[in-house]
Image (cartoon, rainbow, N blue to C red; front, side, top):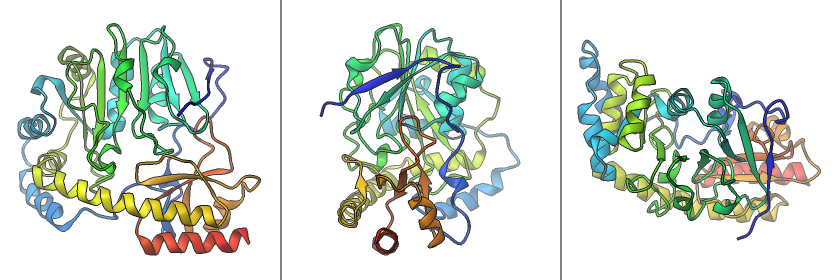
Length: 350
């Protein structure tokens, strides 16, 4: 599907956005939390059990070997191509510290921490801001770009970009944030197994699927020489023993299969919610294949606060480059949560 794009230039000309604003700020206790994209409020019982048993090992320094093997089995990669991180956010900070891009491009609207990390490290950042329906064409990326950062599927739109591998070339690093990859049934778009693509970095985490936001656990996959550069920028023992237990546990065959089964449940509920929102007058950005929907009611920037008044928290959209104060994102939960959201909107919109 074709899309128009525009490239905004560099600081100080970049329009200001609160790049460090995230949904957890809006998830006030007592509200129905549709602002955060973590699937549950706590890890499942079988995972909690493994974590509890892991407490007995906290007297020793973390040993990553078993967790790294779990990653290599999951994606068919070599151990030298794996770097474990304290969540996906640490991966973006390490990349900003280790790389020296001359023409860094962040594709928006998307998760804003990669750009924030690059700016904090003193790099000049160019924005490639996609117009609706927010689908990237590889030819939209400037030839001069030696660092390209994008999400796939993208937060907050949920779209999956096709042909991302066409961005990879010698002399360029392409960072693909796959934090929500396992919310797409079968993960047909994932590049995590593609060791053949030059300069490709895939960033993944366990945060969303297994309700582990507080544990900070993730990893990246990249060429071995780049992994070594990133490792040199990483503090010693950056990933805790319990995070290693979570990685080893959740990347086993059974949990991976369970995650895929859950993604199909979410996929069906997202379709029902999208239809219901459209029927009450909400403009839903098309093409989401993840566990959230980007929404808008034109001329009504008050909708998000109106929902808060009815006990529902959704994620504001105007902190994402390319979106407005009329935009908001809702997580896809279960039928009861969907009905409560739709009912509140029906009242708000008359």
